[in-house]
Length: 149
Ligand SMILES: C[S@@+](CC[C@H](N)C(=O)[O-])C[C@H]1O[C@@H](n2cnc3c(N)ncnc32)[C@H](O)[C@@H]1O
Image 1 (tube, rainbow, N blue to C red):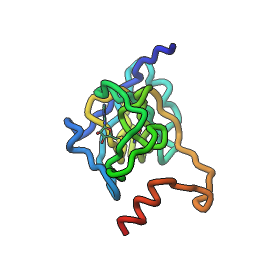
Image 2 (image 1 turned 30 degrees about the horizontal axis):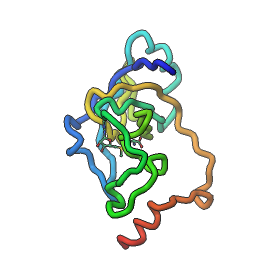
Image 3 (image 1 turned 60 degrees about the vertical axis):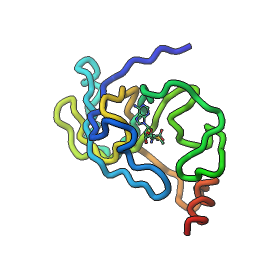
Image 4 (image 1 turned 45 degrees about the horizontal axis):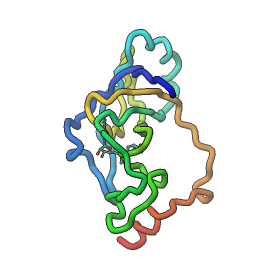
């Protein structure tokens, strides 16, 4: 077993999950703030140089999990939870790539939040991807997108 503690909390415009864009073609342009707790703020040194960040966070409002998920991007077809981004997972950890707009002390102003206001942040890492687009396969999601035309 592991015990995780928040390094901070997300300030987001979303108070309820129903306000967060979802489904095929959903885009996440909302701005928010990653407020890092004072004791972890020294860990932000040099983060300004990165345009995008991985944010790992807790689905703290999820109460249970399903091994078979029914994503809103493909409602009629079930998929294994690990082939989806469902909030109802055995370890309720979320992963979001955000654009870093600016840093104000221990507050990171970002674009691209898809989590609720008050969501606990577990970790932040610079976004680095070395996988060329032509090597990426998008599985059932590509099929769902093709069906929608
Ligand atoms: C499909 S998940 C994807 C989240 C993240 N980008 C990922 O891939 O892990 C996004 C949904 O999680 C739900 N959600 C957001 N914040 C949450 C929280 N703190 N607790 C539980 N559910 C949350 C909302 O319904 C939101 O639309």
